[in-house]
Length: 151
Image 1 (tube, helix red, strand yellow):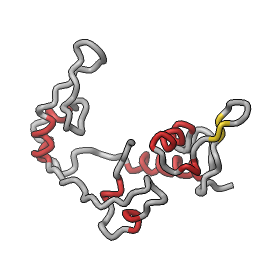
Image 2 (tube, helix red, strand yellow):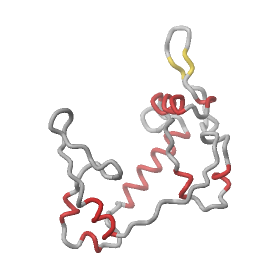
Image 3 (spheres, rainbow, N blue to C red):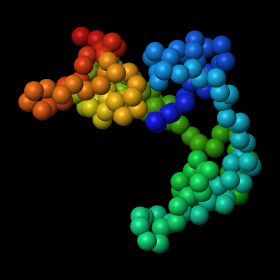
Image 4 (cartoon, rainbow, N blue to C red):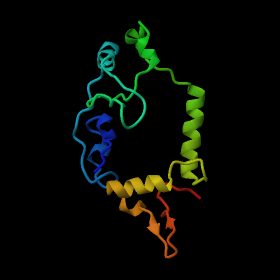
């Protein structure tokens, strides 16, 4: 079973941690992972050796690593000393999140994230059975209306 585990980042007393029905049928009692400062991250990524490509000659990333490829930014001498090691563009981030949220809520074609593939992932993970695609007599798959969809 695929398990994302994002509830572990919520406060210990948050009601979603105990909510089995809306998630995968389990409670999440785990603590969030340890925060890594720039030096600790750099120590991990400096060991990372990846050759892009598949098949013969490609080198997999470290098995216990979160990173799958090297970033050119990691070569900057001051990167490990930065407090914020990435930059987010607030204007575009707001636009994209708003568009995606409204697209999902209003079931707008091509704008939301509630797609057939998403519902098939739920089916594969064996969670939220009321949202699994329904196969029609003609063989096409239909998505049941979700509780968050507005009309």
